[in-house]
Image 1: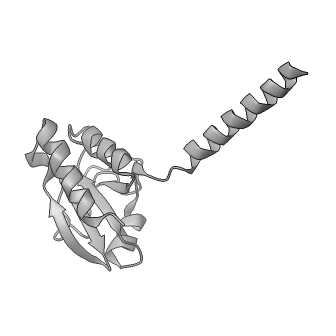
Image 2 (image 1 turned 135 degrees about the vertical axis):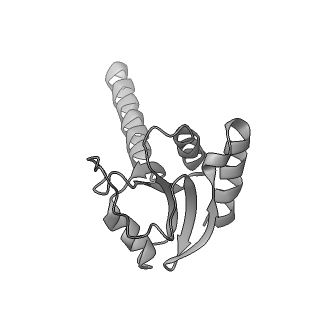
Length: 138
């Protein structure tokens, strides 16, 4: 009987941990142009990292900061407007407002602040992104 009780308690704890982990709604994920439009049309506020390649060396650091600071950062690749397939020539209608290798905070359809993440490396990159994100945490 004690074994069954212990098993049930363990199962409940594991299930609770699983639900808690699934409920985490922070980090970084790639978005399509529709999500960028929501930000730029003022339908959504938040962080946006614009890149021209998913292999940029700063992406893992920005993602880690997002997880550590428990915020959501949308990643938009101008060469993958649908968030999946590469195109030969990007046709990014926000190219004059949103440049690659930059992290933006957008509120009410306006860029509030930007950080040129491609200018930093290592600990300095982590510190700059952390400071940037902390300015706008809710």
